[in-house]
Amino acid sequence: MPADVKETFFFETETLPDLVEYQQKFGIDPSASFMEISPSYFASDNARRNIAALFPDAKIVITLRDPVDRAVSAVRHVQRIGFLERDADPGTFTGNKHIMNILDGSAYRKHVLAWSRAFPGRVLQIKQDDSGTYREDAIAVLSSFVETDLSHNSFKSVRSNPARVARSSALVLVSRYVRDFARNRGMLSVIRRLKPLERYLFKSAPDDTNIAPLRAFLAERLEDEVVYFRNAPLFEHPKAP
Image 1: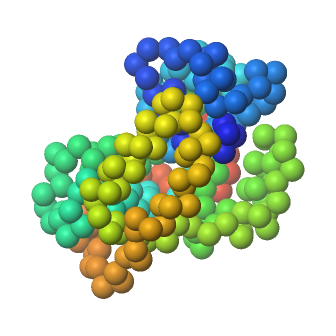
Image 2 (image 1 turned 60 degrees about the vertical axis):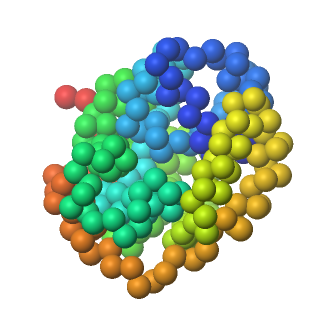
């Protein structure tokens, strides 16, 4: 991965980004294979277009979880960093740009089809099973697809991020500004040194928050995506019609 940076957002630009700049900024060896992980690329037309132009032979792995669970998690993240009030009434969500982006990110059918068209025969979709994990046979298919030996046990041991809330929304926004400033200037060592301090910005989320209205709001708008997710196999190479 690019110098241990999970999300670079590099390919989401309107214009074709500079590949040499990308390689230099993130320490990429032009002669070696590499990977990048970025949830925001999934719903980004710019990212898909730019990646297809620069890496037409790339292999694309799409991982899916329950679309409502994903959307709830995304809303809680937006609330955590101070872009949306934690106790906001879902009735006020219609038209909110953050909520609309989150709903679009759960539009699985549309975006899987777009990636399949941009990278015909080079897309693998895997999804979590009913227990919220990836089954061993799905990991085996993934391992073969990326030509890397992947251990199913290593996936089982990965813990999800715990629910947290910001101690101060203002401090979180400042920290994001500092991180983005450092990332844009290639100061990755600074990012790595500051990352352990992030835990002091948050505290455990209270467990008495009623998310039923939020879940109901999202479930209503993602009804078709829930059907798509439930009917999808645990792994497949989706093809564009």
